[in-house]
Image (cartoon, rainbow, N blue to C red):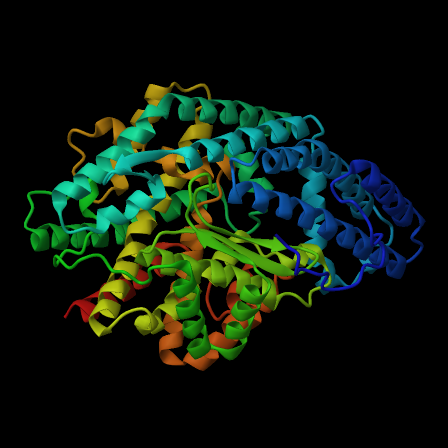
Length: 573
């Protein structure tokens, strides 16, 4: 799959022929690194040991990424599955233990203070956090959780229904929710909902198994609950769980009313008694679904044309991904759900994975993942592997801002009227997602602050959050589907507490977009300059370099809600 990929920079410490999937080959290198840390007699030698450590980390990370990509591209491939699981079971646990020892050596090193303070501030902070939270007894629990998450992905990726006389994946069924025939939309929605409900007991069991292990991890680390442990572990140095709760309140106050306004408009336009779950994706004026492309090559060509107009450097990066076969975009049975961008750490190149089926959301998703890819490309010159990854809250600014900036050029896919419709759908989608983010995050707070809860109690907690943030959708007759709606959110299973970042980042992305309306060239320059910093600066500084602010109180949420309301009004009139 990666025949065209080469190292970005020649290895200096890691052997050229290293098998990064064999611990017997890796262990001696970690032993050498421990000796280098111990033998360092000045800051220069200590820094060289750090660089060597980072080179080895990149080699291991790339091996893990390649195996993960192969597994998700074809979940039915037993060899790819086992190869990935071998890495999870045999390499990751050993690496975590060895990296902990090196982090401990660094934090206690007599020459650590001699390292350039600005350069290593974030690195030292993160190493200290690793030492603080590391517990060897948590390693097997993490491995078990990863394996359960992989089984969740495998199950979801295997689900399909019969519709229109043929088998279709649940992702493929999504396009039928855009159709104008309400009866067909309902049929399609119910088929998917019922297929998921057939697996509800299994999925509930997977969550129970994950929660049991996560609760034990937090107890092992001395935390009162997994929520507080997860927040600390994610390196949230600049905001707290209570700040997230305040963010939920701001969304309820500023975004939910706008969501209700949009649902009321939809109800009136469609001439229906209430907005049902199968009514939210169709065009309210009765237009047929947007058809941005028929085949994935068209999606790629037209997206390339967007970047050609937006920025020459971004365009060259996207072309390079095509030339190096770093895109797998088409949906197919047996492919893991969702979309992602993963980085090949030694090549310093991005890979984009998607499940495109020919709908407008696919265009948005590719722009989104391309934003992540541009982040990887922009930070290629960074020598420290750790710094080629920014905090998630800013990574998602990169991707969400690209949706908004690239969305200005949707004429590559549509005529003028279709562009208007597509932009309305995109901006309404942003309004829709804020309450959903609050729901998912608040649900996870409840999950881990209430250990030992029953499945019924969990359903009740979810229902109460849907009442708070749902925006008035009519679920009559489908109460069980509503109670289990969280089953579709893979972050709950694979990446606990990784979701509120999307809301924080969306506020940043909207600020980038607002800036671009004043000075597009300067906004793009600030955007790329911030991406080039990778993760070498604290989160507030990354936002500041992008000419935005890290704030998710009503002070910031309210003007962004007003911006969305105003832009939608212009597009609709």
